[in-house]
Length: 314
Image 1 (spheres, rainbow, N blue to C red):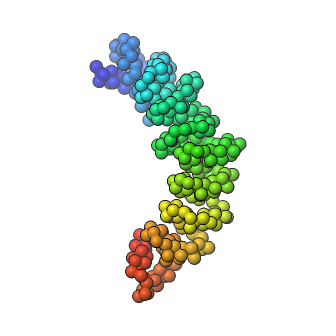
Image 2 (image 1 turned 30 degrees about the horizontal axis):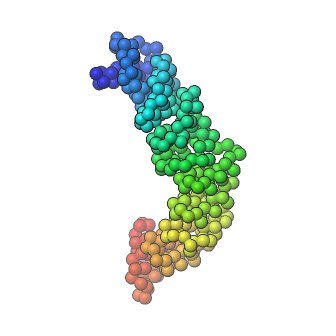
Image 3 (image 1 turned 120 degrees about the vertical axis):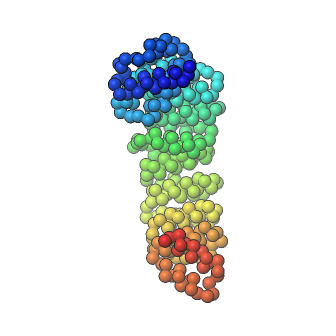
């Protein structure tokens, strides 16, 4: 039966998108099946799935079907269920259909113990309220997954002018995933006003936060960025040093020449030495590298590193 229902619903949605929602229902059982909760749930699932593929007029027609057949009641009922996947599904459906009247109920799930549920609640808040919907970050105790960070970032289209203080507070959250998300937010919108607060995170106890900080400083680059990145370079772990070196390589700044030579000749990490060699090539010092290769007294490992860098640059 579900296969038949699926075909009928697909036909209804397709006809609505093409001809408008007042199109004639071809299957006489459609109204009868609408009284079946399983049929309505399938209808709702397909509306959400289809909505993700369309925009403009088609998008509006799909949402109007949601309203015409009062499917909001089916989605709202799921918020009262005990099973996490049902609650999350209900939130997703209400969000997808732009039913903002459900926001008060959805906000109650921001601190739900199930990630599946609170992820959907977070996303709904941001979809409906934009930047203001991120207020849950003020005291959020759980981990924000990488996928969730991406969803939230994509949903923020603009930042209010007076948000610097709020953003800077998130940068100093005790929740590392909140800090990482905020660094990506700063990067996306190039929040130059947060540069000094971002720079402080170069000494954070989390290696991942330090790496994200380097990337954000690159996005907010100013005249002091290279000096700021190298100030505590020796104290950083190799992973962070490599990220710093990549930023410096990208800058193509001749003032970094001696630094690159030092990293190539004396650093103990293979990846950093290769990156330094590539940076020297970018600056136009390939002849310098070839001289090292041709010098019989040069260590064999150094020659291999330079050859590898030259080969990769071709």
